[in-house]
Image (cartoon, rainbow, N blue to C red; front, side):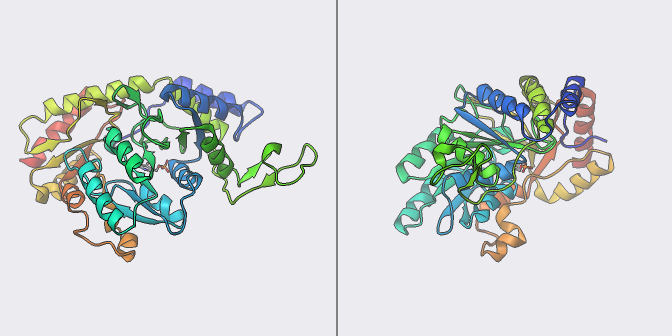
Length: 382
Ligand SMILES: *Cc1c(COP(=O)(O)O)cnc(C)c1O
């Protein structure tokens, strides 16, 4: 069986987890500190906060930017539902910006036009959540300039994109975003089992996310209302959650991070090979822009004839090749339709979805397995 994505676990990873199990700490402790510092330093970011998932990180990121009832947050319809749900979890509204089907990322042209209309109707977004689809960074310089002009905040959903680069900076550096979020679910680039990180542009934002991660509670006397008390004392300043990562997960994360560049290199190598192996087939590859490096979380092809997709999918599944589809447009989910969205609202994302197929891509995929995937796809399209 060849899945569409899977983790790569080494003996060192296993040993790192075992070492934590023999230590004094299991949940958030020294290994989380080390992981946070390692991720921040890898990305060139001011500060990193580790949480129990990217979904939690997106929720805490929205709250830390004071997003709430009366606000609207925009994101891409071509994403996992968590990219949009985080705004609803804060009581804000969600709207979407249509995509550029050649990359699957949100279209800056569509964004600009929607912003112009929103300015007229006085319904500008409080924040935009661009999603680096399949691991390729969005047009962040243009997005950041629009954020400045129209006054919205930017949370990058970089769940697919740890290890990616944009114009010489690593994704997460904070040059073009207020907060960047990574996911460490096992199909993503590196894993902690479950987990996420929020990288913040400054330490004030990072401290706020840390507080939200742990019930809204602080032990910092500088933040207390009124007088403190003895060494046991803490105060709850706002409504937070238990979104903590464990030391067990963080130790795995730090160990995985050491191999991240190798993972991204192998993913890029396999992506290049797919272009050769699939040459001449009636499908198109996603466009890779040359001022950025994709982390290649996913390898997506768009079939020329979308009507064949179901048959191709079934045919590959039957041969043990567990292809997938990313993504069913979020606005077409029943929950979002109940909120008023309809087919036709974001035609590029819908058209893209009708043809998309995600092929297996992960560091442990062998050249022979990949060639078998290409053969099976060739047969299925015949
Ligand atoms: C995986 C994913 C998430 C959610 O990540 P979790 O760590 O599973 O919560 C959010 N956004 C995108 C784009 C994702 O791919």
